[in-house]
Length: 217
Picture 1: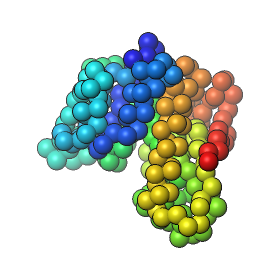
Picture 2 (picture 1 turned 30 degrees about the vertical axis):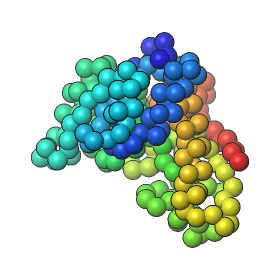
Picture 3 (picture 1 turned 90 degrees about the vertical axis):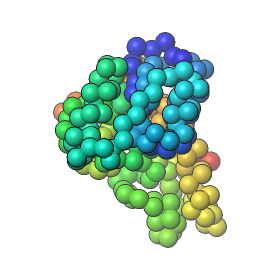
Picture 4 (picture 1 turned 45 degrees about the vertical axis):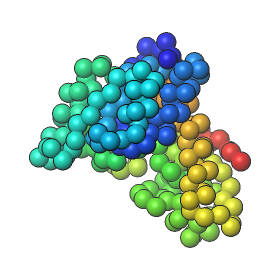
């Protein structure tokens, strides 16, 4: 694992493919993050097995056992706060966060969305991009705010859409991009290069008004 002092909690709900990219890059010393805990709202999430295999602590609370969203989020925060996280990484965590949770960890939560935000927020992005005949598609790492998929954008990975590909094929290509850009952006935070202040991003001490853009084949 990385020797970084940036204690990172990764939140998942499923297989944890993005989590695995963090685990692999941390093991190789490519990112400056200490993967302190992996949390899931589903006890059968395969990502918990990935974390166990890598020697990372795991925690699980089932959201259906709580009266409402905020009650669950408060319970999650109580669990996470025991690990004193500096950074929260949402890696396929299939829950809309309550305003309370976002405020509790303001400036510390990252998410990745499979589209070139602000285009195509929400679900089914790959099929929507194909249906619209878009030339470009990709993924966006952003800070989380109370606006769904609307937080300040940090890094985008872009690729050209093949006109004959299916949504599943496009999804697989975008996921490969995600496995590169998400750990990289998180590591920028771990190194202190990336900061969130008053709703805006500072990157290497300067305002980042547009996300860093990287092209992939």
